[in-house]
Length: 85
Image (cartoon, rainbow, N blue to C red; front, side, top):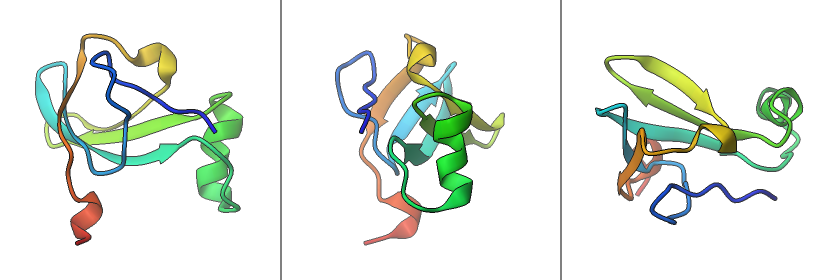
């Protein structure tokens, strides 16, 4: 299992509130190991080790890998994934 980390050192988790290129967003999911769901497992096969999906109103959704983590992605706060409590 791969653990993705922001430049700050915090682990990337589903539901995290982030800023990407200055725009507020949220981590929709993290694909770090096969889970038996063909749609999710595809990201590990396609991106050789997985990554995570973020979404924001101004740019939609973007999938990032460990190579994409830099100062343009900032951790803001832990959130509640998809409205879970």
